[in-house]
Length: 290
Image (cartoon, rainbow, N blue to C red):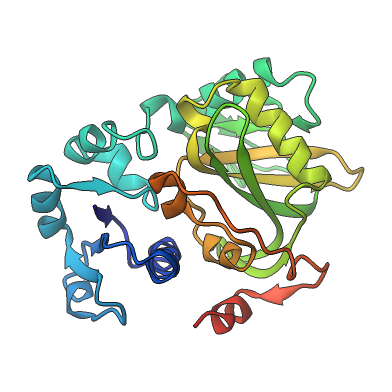
């Protein structure tokens, strides 16, 4: 099988490449991975693995239109915004997305209705999308006023901890949950602590996922991840979800995550030796990989 990853000049592209290398090395699979990006210079980079090819987006669409390739879910914007990519992604459950997934206000309202009794709460979401945000005091004239169109306005959480949780869902009941606590810099994981795959947070995620999607279909199927936070009282909150691997999900190679195994219908080999309560840099996980 030929897999195409869009927006590959990112950490998500790197994660896809590392997952692929790990899987084909372990299994001998003859798949090919095509990492694609709009940057003209990207296609001149050479991967260290002979089954990985770096190409321009124009070449990627030719591969996909020839009907001998599928989209691997490491991208987001291309599948949302490009009609050709959207239609091709829709042919496979692991890559399929719906416009509804990215309407944040409607999504929060939908999740809130379905997860009332869950340990993970959806922050209060306000129904106005065209808003004027201004200070409640100490304001003069138009200082500190924001006029926003098509905005999603949600309750502000006093965040104490942040989490990213990658999930591989095989069927209605069987799913592997890979949670990690993170500190972020510019939206990327800076420091990471791997958490138990069957611990309290993982159990809360399983409850939340099954409340929304009792069956393996729609938004919580196959390959996806959640971003969560916890306030100072210990309450867990949903931030958002994406129908793809998380950008720095390659850190989960250490514990046995393998999205290509899921696609091939193969089971995972879990290793919990690094789930030890220690913080590590993202780069430390990269250094561990051969």
